[in-house]
Amino acid sequence: MNTKSRFNTMELTKMGLLTALICVSAYIVIPLPFSPASLTAQTLVVNLIALLLTPRQAAFTIIVYILLGLTGLPVFSGGVGGPGKLFGPTGGYIMAWLIAVILMSWLKGQRYSFARYCLVTVCVGMPIIYLLGSVYMKFVTGMDWISTFTVAVFPFIPLDLFKCAAAALIAKPVQESLSRARSVI
Image (tube, rainbow, N blue to C red):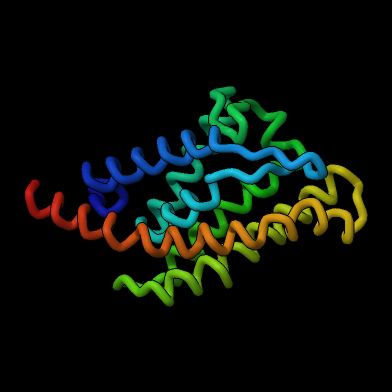
């Protein structure tokens, strides 16, 4: 039997807590009257998932989150669930998180580095999320490229830069706490 394919209790706990955190962060929403997308705390948590987990764990966490939402549980932004949200104008962002967390987790390195964590979240994660989310929104809504970027990317950049830095800062004490917890267990 291959034990490498299974997650241990600590890994499952981390993934479960981060899944719960992304679900809760969906309720921290600031709607924008000019955009189908809202400002949420979810991108902060997506970055944390990538920075705290391995690529495999991060992918699994986002897949579980997406499946929870697809079944109708109100875990998508604004407390919405069901396929309508995932396949609506902003669904591309949710789907992009899967690719973004895998790449960010893979590129973050083995040891904590604030600069590297910021670089990976800003230069890898955000562009992937913006690009895939915007392409999907353009396809679903039929907007032109300028309109799509105006409502789906530009208004979000300043706060997302802050959320990237915040995730990079938060990751270190969380990693240290998890290491201490691992040594106690």
